[in-house]
Length: 360
Image 1: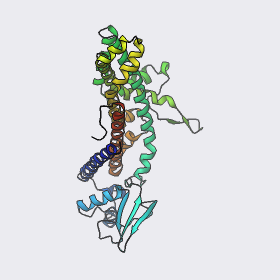
Image 2 (image 1 turned 90 degrees about the vertical axis):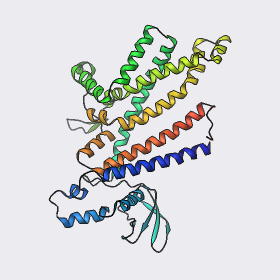
Image 3 (image 1 turned 45 degrees about the vertical axis):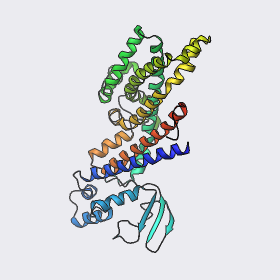
């Protein structure tokens, strides 16, 4: 097991390194002057040069990239000399940090990954993401849980009642769910349930987890605002998991050990739920993990349309303002989540299926 985990972490590290390099060089070729974004277009050249010096933007691209890696790495190397490619860690930038090793001219420190500061608000990107991430995590988890429960029930029932009217109807729902774009579904669902039928549903077209009371009573928890974005976000994984569950259960039910279980006199319910569904879960677990990671990354349009205060709204707002550190930090944060989730799922998959060798 330990070898298996180390190997997955090894692969994940190089995936993240590739993402970091791609994000850095992609955003460094985009138009825009970060110094003028921070100071305004009327800023004098002395102030612009000072900001470029502080951010290291007057250095060659490869030195900027090394500095970017140094900021991201929990273990980072610094020099007292600003002429070097590394800069000495000060408490304002890396707070808190702990000195691990110190020599006459270099220092090795342990710190939290530093994603930079917003050009607009001057806040640390980690603080912005830390405030937005819980909302996105809650939305993705609620959406995925709702889609998983409904799709498992429909998929298993469809496999049991193969070629029936229910089976054909479930396949139609599956196809519609897989083919419906999230941004179109969000607009349609918001219009129908929060505008046309709002008197019956009582749902809002816009709103986040907390709502500010119009009568001065402060913020209050408004859980109903999660219903429409969760349904919208869960439509596509719902369609995929229904079809996958149906196919996987049908394949398992045709195996010899299922016929053996039935010949022993076990009830059909026990055969299906204990022997059939359990062995059909492997591809479903893999798909659910992939879709959960995708929901974390793909909630941008849904959050923006429903004004759900998550990472999606943060990314769109940062793109509109050319706030590149926030966009870069968001992309890297999502990439790290994808890698962690995939490693976790690989371990679960290996535990569920004895045929998977942990040392491979």
